[in-house]
Length: 120
Image (cartoon, rainbow, N blue to C red):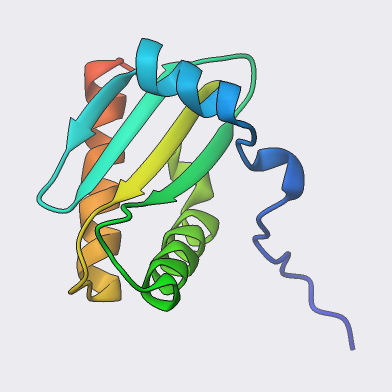
C-alpha cells in the first residue's frame, strides 16, 4: 500500500557546490550568528544550501556527524528557508544537542527572513 505522504528529500541540485560558489557567498553575502552556528546568505537565482563544519573540531568523525545533523535539520525544515537565496550553515563547536542546534538554525533563518523582509 502506497503512502500519500511525500518524503522531504535533500536533492543534489539543492546543494551548493564548488569553491567559487562558497567563496562568493562568504565574500559578498551577509551573516548572522548564534553561539556556535553562523548562517551566511546571498540573494541568488535559486535556493541552494551548503554545510560547513570548523576544522577546530579535530576528528573527522565528529565533523561528519555534525554535517549530517545540519543536513537533517535542513531537510526537515527546507520550506522554512527562503527561495532564491544561497545559504551556508557553519557549525563551530562540539557539544551539540540536535534540538539545540535545530533551534539555533531556525532562529537564524527567522532573523534572516525579518532582516530581508521575506514573506511579507
